[in-house]
Image (cartoon, rainbow, N blue to C red; front, side, top):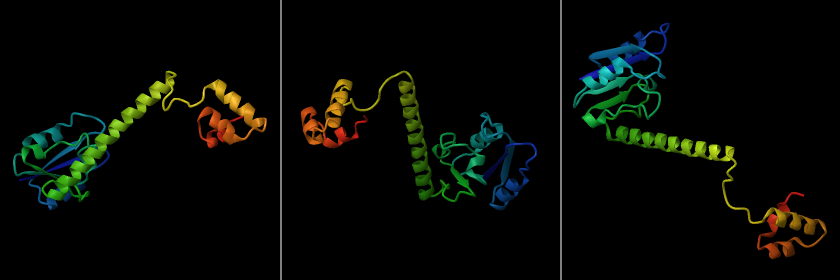
Length: 175
């Protein structure tokens, strides 16, 4: 059986266009809801997911009507059911290619969330005065001494050899 799910965010919108599209696509039962995508606890979405059984397909007009992110996307394939989006042709878990695409995009979303966490941790560390990255090759005293020697006309290569660094590092030191 094909189930449809239509959701609008505000009362002034109309879910009728979604219902027409889903009915035209062959949905025998269409559940509708007026709820912001940012809120959790969509009762009709939960009812649609709970109602489908093995061999059934849950259809939506666009994937953002069902979930705001891949993380929020219900895993319907665990029950042997399918998920299909009319507007996003790559979302069709009734096919091998559709399952692959959904798995890949879900993995990318998870990877992005992890990177966001790493970036946030780095920002917190910097805010607390932690210096991230490689330890500087030259101490502040060595930097001042190298700048003084360079400004006095000593060859950059010679200074770099003394500190065991590349000449470009000595050239880039700010005066």
